[in-house]
Image (tube, rainbow, N blue to C red; front, side):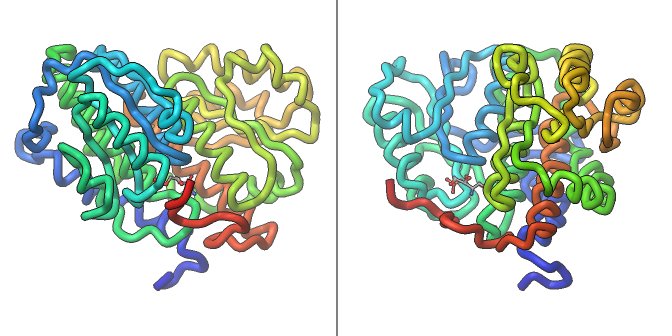
Length: 364
Ligand code: M6R
């Protein structure tokens, strides 16, 4: 049941420290402080290229992984939504790795894409939450998220556990490829091990996010901005808001604003900016100032130092823990989930069962 929580979605958001820890436990060796993978029927060191295919929130998890794998393991990653990938007859290099991400393991388009990749002599790997699912059965290798049953139609804990698996996989891949030195590897492993504790800290912001949500609930359109691995989190934040509050929202790469969407900005548009302290921070901050100069109402999510730098420009800010940039996408998922949740509750929508949506999309 929902226990003390008003909705399954809220319960599932608050379960994240636990289920991220459970997921991590299958890869993390606490004594050696290292990450390892189960044995695969192919050699990670010789993978020439990776293709990632998924739908919806699982697709955004894959998009974060593209940034991680390219940066740390130095392997090219192609990514597409399954409904496009399955029909476009993509040429695939023999021996490549195809990775399918799905909470249910039953999404029709993702399963069809998996079968196509198999016909193209790819190594097939899936990341699923539901054991024994169709995708698991048809894959050469499988990694599990240990999110437990996810009841809310809006995916939350499945997403952050997918990111957890993908983060571990990225480290293992980087190591197998000889692409990272031991010092960086140790730093990444340490940062991922600390994620459950950091998520708990962020969940304490629940009340301030509720106050911010009340100001967002009146909006007709909301923009979410991020750069690098924060860009997929911006899109995920926008998807969460659309799904459960029915407010139109878009996630944009912050650097794309001046190529069109900045024309939308006026006093009525809340702009949520995700700006962890990484090599993109200054650029995101300057994109934010451009938004403010056009009257946009900025909600700035950054660590304490980042929030202070932008204090004069933001309508509100969310102070995040100061973490290794590698794990920022996992942590910044939490406030965007809570924000969408509180907007929806404020509007009185059916949070766990939003209109027109099904938990598992098993038809095309
Ligand atoms: O079970 P899957 O992960 O394959 O589902 C994919 C999407 O249908 C799913 O993530 C959907 O976008 C959620 N409603 C997002 O909250």
